[in-house]
Length: 318
Image (cartoon, rainbow, N blue to C red; front, side):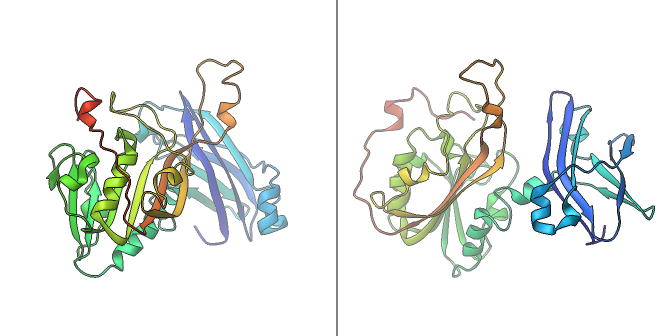
């Protein structure tokens, strides 16, 4: 594929046994004459190009993008993601050449929370520029999915500590994040981060207070959790966060300032039953991930002396 071919994937998703691909494409020097898709089993479906009116693309690229949009909605085997991710888009040009687009799902990854231009990338940049020996704490460090954040997130020149409610790979300290000062001294860490854990914390405000106590002044915190996501790890799935919710946790009273917040990975909420209260939810904004980067600006005097075991009958499940 040459740089003369310009495209973007807006949606690559599925519902039951139907796959949806929506986006736009054009070539700076040729005409697209046919369009289609290729399935993992080698089957293809090709039809004449019928570019859909696209004022948004035209406003950026000029007349060449005036009819650049395409839309595919077709039946496929959606029983396994391995049947979906390899699907290709096919474009045949006026000179007889063919362009195939693979890894359509990568568009979402680039826009998601782990993209280099997003909050995770910004936090990783700060880690990379930290002095040798700076201390990093991960809350919820157990390798449940087989991925070591110690290796993926934290540069080797920094001193990493992982805490988790359960023992396992990636865990240095077994303990509850609600009681960080039970395991660590005050003003210890330059960085604290947590990935997909805060929704499982019974009292996240208490964890933020504890984070403040074990962090150094000027230290950075990054939290990634969910805005809209299915219930999981029942019964210990407690919270969902918008990008505005972070200001209720990280503020001058808890000893922080919010630097940036963001929502990533747009999703649709599709009701099983439509009535007045659920109508239109599939068109409203919802996102898989919510993130915040905050800086400790001062020590907090807030206290929350309630213990988790005073509320829950048992600790968190595996």
